[in-house]
Length: 312
Image (tube, rainbow, N blue to C red; front, top):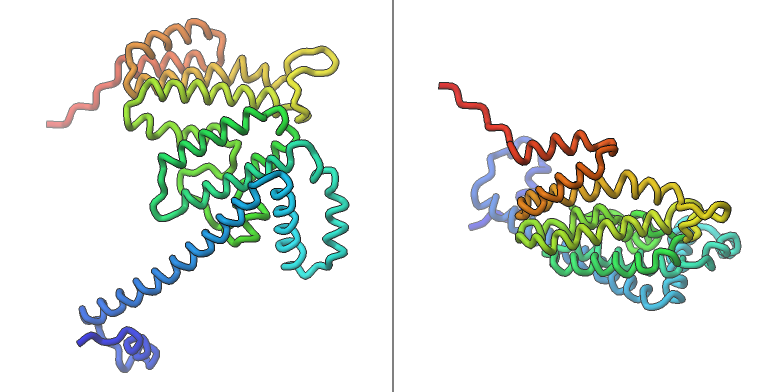
Protein backbone atom coordinates (compact mmCIF):
# COMPACT_ATOMS: atom_id res chain seq x y z
CA UNK A 1 0.00 0.00 0.00
CA UNK A 2 1.32 3.44 -0.96
CA UNK A 3 2.03 5.93 1.76
CA UNK A 4 0.04 9.09 0.81
CA UNK A 5 2.39 11.93 -0.07
CA UNK A 6 0.31 14.46 1.83
CA UNK A 7 0.60 12.38 5.02
CA UNK A 8 4.30 12.00 4.50
CA UNK A 9 4.72 15.76 4.19
CA UNK A 10 2.65 16.22 7.36
CA UNK A 11 4.98 13.91 9.27
CA UNK A 12 7.94 15.96 8.10
CA UNK A 13 6.49 18.96 9.91
CA UNK A 14 6.33 17.12 13.27
CA UNK A 15 10.08 17.28 13.90
CA UNK A 16 12.98 14.85 13.82
CA UNK A 17 11.26 12.28 16.03
CA UNK A 18 9.71 10.63 12.99
CA UNK A 19 12.65 11.12 10.63
CA UNK A 20 13.17 8.07 8.41
CA UNK A 21 14.55 7.32 4.96
CA UNK A 22 12.16 7.40 2.02
CA UNK A 23 10.79 4.05 0.90
CA UNK A 24 10.34 3.30 -2.77
CA UNK A 25 6.58 3.60 -2.33
CA UNK A 26 7.01 7.03 -0.74
CA UNK A 27 9.18 8.18 -3.63
CA UNK A 28 6.62 7.00 -6.18
CA UNK A 29 3.81 8.78 -4.33
CA UNK A 30 5.78 12.02 -4.16
CA UNK A 31 6.71 11.84 -7.84
CA UNK A 32 3.08 11.19 -8.74
CA UNK A 33 1.93 14.26 -6.83
CA UNK A 34 4.77 16.32 -8.26
CA UNK A 35 3.79 15.30 -11.79
CA UNK A 36 0.20 16.41 -11.16
CA UNK A 37 1.34 19.76 -9.82
CA UNK A 38 3.66 20.23 -12.80
CA UNK A 39 0.85 19.45 -15.22
CA UNK A 40 -1.38 21.99 -13.45
CA UNK A 41 1.38 24.61 -13.59
CA UNK A 42 2.03 23.94 -17.28
CA UNK A 43 -1.68 24.17 -17.98
CA UNK A 44 -1.83 27.59 -16.37
CA UNK A 45 1.20 28.74 -18.36
CA UNK A 46 -0.35 27.46 -21.59
CA UNK A 47 -3.59 29.29 -20.76
CA UNK A 48 -1.69 32.52 -20.17
CA UNK A 49 0.21 32.04 -23.44
CA UNK A 50 -3.06 31.36 -25.23
CA UNK A 51 -4.66 34.54 -23.91
CA UNK A 52 -1.58 36.55 -24.81
CA UNK A 53 -1.36 35.04 -28.31
CA UNK A 54 -5.01 35.84 -29.01
CA UNK A 55 -4.62 39.41 -27.75
CA UNK A 56 -1.40 40.01 -29.68
CA UNK A 57 -2.88 38.65 -32.90
CA UNK A 58 -5.89 40.89 -32.44
CA UNK A 59 -3.62 43.91 -32.06
CA UNK A 60 -1.82 43.03 -35.29
CA UNK A 61 -4.99 43.40 -37.34
CA UNK A 62 -4.38 46.99 -38.45
CA UNK A 63 -2.39 50.07 -37.53
CA UNK A 64 -5.40 51.49 -35.73
CA UNK A 65 -5.88 48.31 -33.71
CA UNK A 66 -2.18 48.22 -32.86
CA UNK A 67 -2.27 51.80 -31.54
CA UNK A 68 -5.42 51.19 -29.51
CA UNK A 69 -3.96 47.99 -28.06
CA UNK A 70 -0.73 49.79 -27.23
CA UNK A 71 -2.58 52.56 -25.40
CA UNK A 72 -4.69 50.02 -23.49
CA UNK A 73 -1.58 48.18 -22.36
CA UNK A 74 0.19 51.40 -21.35
CA UNK A 75 -2.83 52.47 -19.34
CA UNK A 76 -2.97 49.11 -17.58
CA UNK A 77 0.76 48.69 -16.83
CA UNK A 78 1.96 52.24 -16.28
CA UNK A 79 -1.13 53.84 -14.79
CA UNK A 80 -3.76 51.48 -13.37
CA UNK A 81 -1.23 49.10 -11.81
CA UNK A 82 0.75 52.08 -10.52
CA UNK A 83 -2.44 53.60 -9.05
CA UNK A 84 -2.20 56.69 -11.21
CA UNK A 85 -5.25 58.69 -12.25
CA UNK A 86 -7.09 58.89 -15.56
CA UNK A 87 -6.05 62.53 -15.73
CA UNK A 88 -2.39 61.49 -15.55
CA UNK A 89 -2.93 59.02 -18.38
CA UNK A 90 -4.59 61.68 -20.55
CA UNK A 91 -1.70 64.04 -19.84
CA UNK A 92 0.78 61.32 -20.83
CA UNK A 93 -1.08 60.77 -24.12
CA UNK A 94 -0.90 64.48 -24.82
CA UNK A 95 2.88 64.51 -24.34
CA UNK A 96 3.26 61.43 -26.57
CA UNK A 97 1.17 62.76 -29.43
CA UNK A 98 4.17 63.32 -31.71
CA UNK A 99 5.42 59.75 -31.30
CA UNK A 100 1.98 58.17 -31.56
CA UNK A 101 1.38 59.90 -34.87
CA UNK A 102 4.93 59.58 -36.20
CA UNK A 103 5.46 57.75 -39.52
CA UNK A 104 5.91 54.03 -39.10
CA UNK A 105 5.22 53.85 -35.33
CA UNK A 106 1.96 51.90 -35.58
CA UNK A 107 3.46 49.58 -38.19
CA UNK A 108 6.46 48.98 -35.92
CA UNK A 109 4.06 48.06 -33.09
CA UNK A 110 2.52 45.44 -35.35
CA UNK A 111 5.98 43.98 -36.00
CA UNK A 112 6.60 43.94 -32.23
CA UNK A 113 3.37 42.04 -31.68
CA UNK A 114 4.16 39.62 -34.49
CA UNK A 115 7.59 38.92 -33.00
CA UNK A 116 6.05 38.39 -29.58
CA UNK A 117 3.77 35.76 -31.13
CA UNK A 118 6.77 33.97 -32.65
CA UNK A 119 8.67 34.27 -29.36
CA UNK A 120 5.85 32.60 -27.42
CA UNK A 121 5.68 29.87 -30.05
CA UNK A 122 9.45 29.36 -29.78
CA UNK A 123 9.03 29.00 -26.00
CA UNK A 124 6.34 26.33 -26.31
CA UNK A 125 6.99 22.73 -25.32
CA UNK A 126 7.56 21.39 -28.86
CA UNK A 127 8.19 24.35 -31.15
CA UNK A 128 8.06 23.84 -34.91
CA UNK A 129 11.52 25.23 -35.70
CA UNK A 130 11.06 24.91 -39.46
CA UNK A 131 7.88 26.99 -39.41
CA UNK A 132 9.48 29.48 -37.03
CA UNK A 133 12.42 29.85 -39.43
CA UNK A 134 10.09 30.48 -42.36
CA UNK A 135 8.07 33.02 -40.36
CA UNK A 136 11.23 34.77 -39.16
CA UNK A 137 12.55 35.01 -42.73
CA UNK A 138 9.21 36.42 -43.93
CA UNK A 139 9.23 38.98 -41.10
CA UNK A 140 12.70 40.19 -42.06
CA UNK A 141 11.78 40.36 -45.73
CA UNK A 142 8.65 42.46 -45.22
CA UNK A 143 10.21 44.62 -42.51
CA UNK A 144 13.19 45.67 -44.59
CA UNK A 145 11.09 46.06 -47.70
CA UNK A 146 9.65 48.97 -45.68
CA UNK A 147 13.03 49.98 -44.22
CA UNK A 148 12.83 53.58 -45.45
CA UNK A 149 9.31 54.13 -44.08
CA UNK A 150 10.22 52.51 -40.75
CA UNK A 151 13.43 54.48 -40.18
CA UNK A 152 11.82 56.79 -37.62
CA UNK A 153 10.57 53.77 -35.65
CA UNK A 154 13.84 51.81 -35.63
CA UNK A 155 14.15 51.97 -31.82
CA UNK A 156 10.79 50.20 -31.50
CA UNK A 157 11.94 47.49 -33.91
CA UNK A 158 15.19 47.01 -32.00
CA UNK A 159 13.56 46.78 -28.57
CA UNK A 160 13.65 43.43 -26.75
CA UNK A 161 10.03 42.32 -27.02
CA UNK A 162 10.11 40.88 -23.48
CA UNK A 163 10.51 44.46 -22.21
CA UNK A 164 7.56 45.86 -24.16
CA UNK A 165 4.38 47.05 -22.52
CA UNK A 166 2.57 44.22 -24.35
CA UNK A 167 4.67 41.54 -22.64
CA UNK A 168 4.25 43.24 -19.26
CA UNK A 169 0.50 43.60 -19.62
CA UNK A 170 0.08 39.87 -20.35
CA UNK A 171 2.69 38.64 -17.84
CA UNK A 172 5.00 37.06 -20.39
CA UNK A 173 8.00 39.34 -19.86
CA UNK A 174 9.98 36.39 -18.46
CA UNK A 175 9.74 34.41 -21.70
CA UNK A 176 13.15 34.23 -23.39
CA UNK A 177 13.58 31.08 -25.49
CA UNK A 178 17.05 29.69 -25.97
CA UNK A 179 18.69 30.51 -29.29
CA UNK A 180 15.94 32.93 -30.22
CA UNK A 181 16.46 36.62 -31.09
CA UNK A 182 14.39 38.98 -28.96
CA UNK A 183 13.54 41.70 -31.48
CA UNK A 184 12.37 41.60 -35.11
CA UNK A 185 15.21 43.67 -36.61
CA UNK A 186 17.98 41.44 -35.19
CA UNK A 187 19.33 40.52 -38.63
CA UNK A 188 22.58 38.84 -37.60
CA UNK A 189 21.13 36.83 -34.73
CA UNK A 190 18.08 35.72 -36.72
CA UNK A 191 20.31 34.33 -39.45
CA UNK A 192 22.88 32.80 -37.08
CA UNK A 193 20.45 31.24 -34.59
CA UNK A 194 17.37 30.49 -36.69
CA UNK A 195 18.00 30.45 -40.45
CA UNK A 196 21.55 29.15 -40.96
CA UNK A 197 21.62 26.09 -38.60
CA UNK A 198 19.09 23.90 -40.46
CA UNK A 199 20.75 24.67 -43.80
CA UNK A 200 24.13 23.70 -42.39
CA UNK A 201 22.99 20.42 -40.86
CA UNK A 202 21.03 19.40 -43.97
CA UNK A 203 23.91 20.13 -46.32
CA UNK A 204 21.88 22.57 -48.46
CA UNK A 205 24.92 24.56 -49.57
CA UNK A 206 23.19 26.49 -52.36
CA UNK A 207 20.42 27.60 -50.02
CA UNK A 208 22.99 28.45 -47.36
CA UNK A 209 24.77 30.72 -49.85
CA UNK A 210 21.47 32.35 -50.84
CA UNK A 211 20.71 32.99 -47.17
CA UNK A 212 24.11 34.61 -46.68
CA UNK A 213 23.59 36.85 -49.72
CA UNK A 214 20.21 37.86 -48.36
CA UNK A 215 21.69 38.63 -44.96
CA UNK A 216 24.31 40.92 -46.50
CA UNK A 217 21.62 42.69 -48.54
CA UNK A 218 19.51 43.30 -45.44
CA UNK A 219 22.51 44.58 -43.48
CA UNK A 220 23.17 47.04 -46.32
CA UNK A 221 19.56 48.26 -46.24
CA UNK A 222 19.77 48.74 -42.49
CA UNK A 223 22.89 50.92 -42.80
CA UNK A 224 21.42 52.82 -45.73
CA UNK A 225 18.11 53.79 -44.17
CA UNK A 226 18.55 53.42 -40.41
CA UNK A 227 21.70 55.42 -39.86
CA UNK A 228 22.29 59.09 -39.13
CA UNK A 229 19.21 61.03 -38.14
CA UNK A 230 16.87 58.18 -39.00
CA UNK A 231 14.97 60.09 -41.71
CA UNK A 232 15.22 57.28 -44.23
CA UNK A 233 17.69 59.04 -46.52
CA UNK A 234 21.07 57.71 -47.55
CA UNK A 235 22.36 61.10 -48.79
CA UNK A 236 23.13 64.20 -46.78
CA UNK A 237 21.37 67.43 -47.65
CA UNK A 238 24.60 69.36 -48.11
CA UNK A 239 27.03 67.39 -50.23
CA UNK A 240 24.96 64.42 -51.48
CA UNK A 241 27.56 61.95 -50.24
CA UNK A 242 26.72 58.51 -48.78
CA UNK A 243 26.29 58.59 -45.03
CA UNK A 244 29.27 57.46 -42.90
CA UNK A 245 27.66 54.18 -41.81
CA UNK A 246 27.06 53.17 -45.43
CA UNK A 247 30.67 53.99 -46.32
CA UNK A 248 31.93 52.00 -43.33
CA UNK A 249 29.71 49.05 -44.21
CA UNK A 250 30.95 48.92 -47.80
CA UNK A 251 34.62 49.29 -46.94
CA UNK A 252 34.84 47.34 -43.66
CA UNK A 253 31.80 45.29 -42.69
CA UNK A 254 30.70 43.89 -46.05
CA UNK A 255 34.13 42.32 -46.77
CA UNK A 256 34.02 40.75 -43.29
CA UNK A 257 30.58 39.28 -43.98
CA UNK A 258 31.66 37.99 -47.40
CA UNK A 259 34.65 36.28 -45.79
CA UNK A 260 32.44 34.74 -43.09
CA UNK A 261 30.13 33.47 -45.83
CA UNK A 262 32.94 31.75 -47.73
CA UNK A 263 34.32 30.23 -44.53
CA UNK A 264 30.87 28.86 -43.77
CA UNK A 265 30.41 27.45 -47.28
CA UNK A 266 33.89 25.86 -47.22
CA UNK A 267 33.12 24.13 -43.93
CA UNK A 268 29.68 22.91 -45.01
CA UNK A 269 30.20 21.33 -48.39
CA UNK A 270 31.62 23.74 -50.99
CA UNK A 271 35.36 23.45 -50.42
CA UNK A 272 36.50 23.84 -54.04
CA UNK A 273 34.26 26.77 -54.95
CA UNK A 274 34.74 28.60 -51.66
CA UNK A 275 38.52 28.15 -51.79
CA UNK A 276 38.77 29.87 -55.17
CA UNK A 277 36.57 32.73 -54.01
CA UNK A 278 38.45 33.09 -50.71
CA UNK A 279 41.79 33.48 -52.47
CA UNK A 280 40.28 36.10 -54.79
CA UNK A 281 38.68 37.85 -51.82
CA UNK A 282 42.02 38.24 -50.06
CA UNK A 283 43.64 39.47 -53.28
CA UNK A 284 40.90 42.05 -53.81
CA UNK A 285 40.99 43.29 -50.22
CA UNK A 286 44.69 43.39 -49.36
CA UNK A 287 44.23 46.76 -47.71
CA UNK A 288 41.54 45.55 -45.34
CA UNK A 289 42.50 45.43 -41.66
CA UNK A 290 41.58 41.73 -41.50
CA UNK A 291 43.40 40.59 -44.64
CA UNK A 292 46.30 39.09 -42.69
CA UNK A 293 43.93 37.21 -40.37
CA UNK A 294 41.96 35.91 -43.34
CA UNK A 295 45.19 34.52 -44.78
CA UNK A 296 45.91 32.65 -41.55
CA UNK A 297 42.39 31.24 -41.42
CA UNK A 298 42.56 30.15 -45.06
CA UNK A 299 45.90 28.44 -44.48
CA UNK A 300 44.49 26.55 -41.49
CA UNK A 301 41.63 25.30 -43.67
CA UNK A 302 43.96 24.13 -46.43
CA UNK A 303 46.61 22.62 -44.15
CA UNK A 304 45.11 21.91 -40.73
CA UNK A 305 47.60 21.14 -38.01
CA UNK A 306 47.91 17.46 -37.20
CA UNK A 307 46.95 16.52 -33.65
CA UNK A 308 49.92 15.91 -31.35
CA UNK A 309 51.16 12.32 -31.40
CA UNK A 310 50.24 10.22 -28.40
CA UNK A 311 53.09 9.45 -26.05
CA UNK A 312 54.29 5.83 -26.14
